[in-house]
Image 1: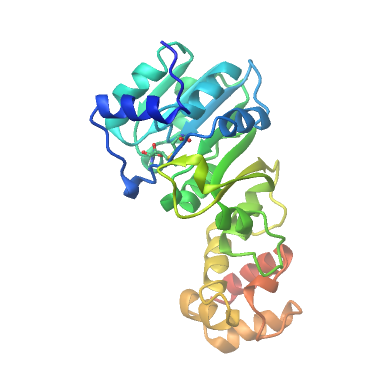
Image 2: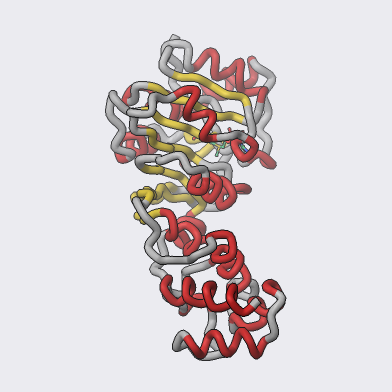
Length: 288
Ligand code: SAM
């Protein structure tokens, strides 16, 4: 039986029959605006030859739209209480596999090898749980799985940070870290009234396109990411203090490195270009 998963009464009946109550701590806000999931799945650019990894299918409202367009969908859901619900709502889609797991504890390369053909393009499409947006995003990008594209719904502020120009006020540590792996693009905004229950914040849908090669030479990726985090430790202050404290270097050493790459010793991290951030990481690594 096909369920109308954007009809509030259908959703309420379905969930109450399974004794399900929403868990805020798991970021459980389900889309009930009928226009959002088809638009998201369409913009993801998936064809019948492609595979999709979805994170947090909930009751399957986006999963259904993905299943209609893709060859195969693997959906990773942490909350075991949703499995019997998904078994019903996805009953008509033999091309969907639900995996009950925490995505952050899942070996994604092994999951991809188990479910997808190496020749298939694999996309990620997900309405991410907001409490772990950045960790999941970085986990996906660092997984080594060559995703063709990631279409993600995130909190609006997170979306603004992720699509911010490097060197602008909206940029943060995650902007640099993400941009190392992918290009990003804002697709559309989603108001809080599009969900049940309605969250306190608005959202947006982004597309990330993984790069074939990193945009800068960093020598040591782990140290580059540590440098980025340290530089942004005190966001609205100069980068020196965070860099010195987190990397165990004197302020003089950090200030000298900043000067050598043409930055002021009182510069803030948000003003660094990607090349300057990479050059700084190289210098500080050598100075240890
Ligand atoms: N896709 C559905 C939709 O668009 O209506 C639900 C999205 S809801 C914002 C996030 C979903 O992620 C919930 O179903 C939640 O249980 C699940 N989730 C939360 N943390 C997770 C994790 N670490 N791994 C996998 N799923 C998780």
